[in-house]
Image (cartoon, rainbow, N blue to C red; front, top):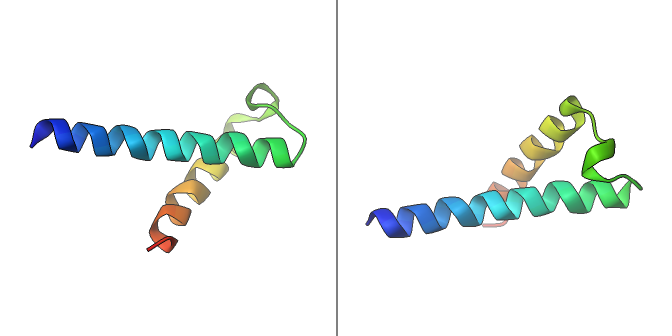
Length: 54
């Protein structure tokens, strides 16, 4: 079902983006303060966190 697949993809994106925002805030930063490398590292950590939830 394409609609279901799209919904799941959007949910994953939102969860990962929220993870990046929250972790930036924990370190006293906003997204604008992060370098591209820092954002990429947090994004990859978010992907790893999704797999460890289950």
